[in-house]
Image 1 (cartoon, rainbow, N blue to C red):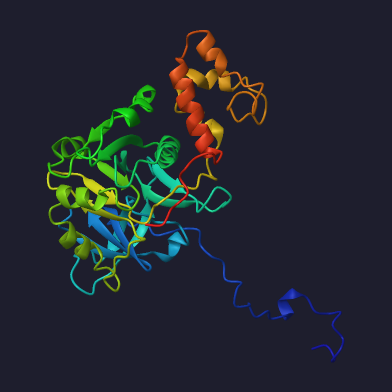
Image 2 (image 1 turned 180 degrees about the vertical axis):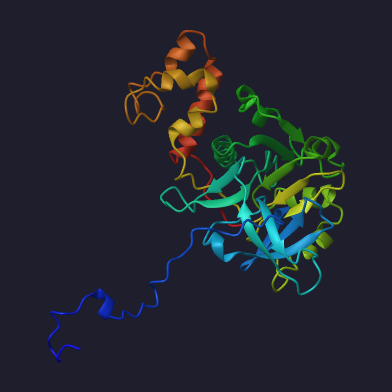
Length: 341
């Protein structure tokens, strides 16, 4: 044994190293969860999600996000896989272990300068833009912004006009005639049979300002809406607020996602190219535009090539006007700023 201080004769076999707390190698292997069951997220409340197992509204399960998912976002409409107690019995809790790739996403930002995107609904096939023809009067800026969000997110926009017993829809419809936009017109004194048939067996998200009759439509489409909302809101503390989206089952199949918290769309996350992509006849010409072109045309964008589509007969003037109106909405030139209810 060497004398104290004489370390020259030591080698690594003579030194005992005590491993630190964080030195244990971590395995990259994760549980396979082969027994996981599929479900659709239909409600959320303070870190707990309500999930319909196999999309069945009668099999609601409360779940938390598994640790291995980290901060992976989970939103209404997401297709997830669950493990743990999936019976849905009181005081039971499952775990969300996987979130499937989304087929569509409805996003918004707080305003046009906010870089933080909020995913409102995932995997919806249709966006119902509910607008009253009177009381309150229609606001085309809000409609345009919803159209932009739908086109960019992969949803089929549909204009739902309410209170047609109070005003003629012809003038408003003329502004959207070139967009090939599906339109459903409803009255307060009639059942929305056409709308019900259109959205059956689909997942549809519904947006609209306060007072346009959206709640009335939801109650007619889902007669047990209050009871269904209560069941979905039983997650956590059993609260459903006006700022939360919730998916409600349609009687004949499908889901309607009510989004009462959305009053306007910030579009900071959307580029002019995203909007042009929804208009096939302009896509190739847009690629020839100068860098940074907003495609608004002169004088804002003097080098914009989109006018060539009209000159050559590839597009009608009305289509270009409609596209540029949506681009102007994205640029902030609209009437969509929220007003007091």
